[in-house]
Length: 137
Image (tube, rainbow, N blue to C red; front, side):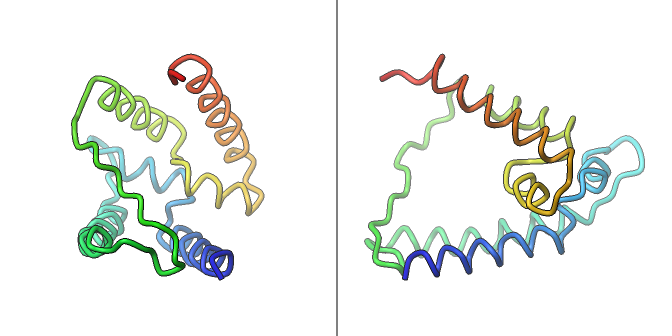
């Protein structure tokens, strides 16, 4: 049952990203271009996602099990440290340069967009480097 729920959730998420324009790097770059031809439409998408997320995470925090029966694992760490800030800056820079973030890049890759393939390859390389260099075991 969990696989079906995961598939349907992923499909709905991917379709939402496509409909919102998050898989179009030019639309994303237009949103990030505050000094030029700014396109505020993605702000509405993000605002809606944040508003929904506030309620969903508040409800999830009161549960012990997910809808599929799996244990709820909500991170307890709430500190903002140097690694978090640097990671956010690196993520934002990559988003601004490429016009992709991980979820929309995977959806765009699935639709055959070549630029998404380059981004996903670089993202995977960064994940491997992170695990090799920074994760302490």
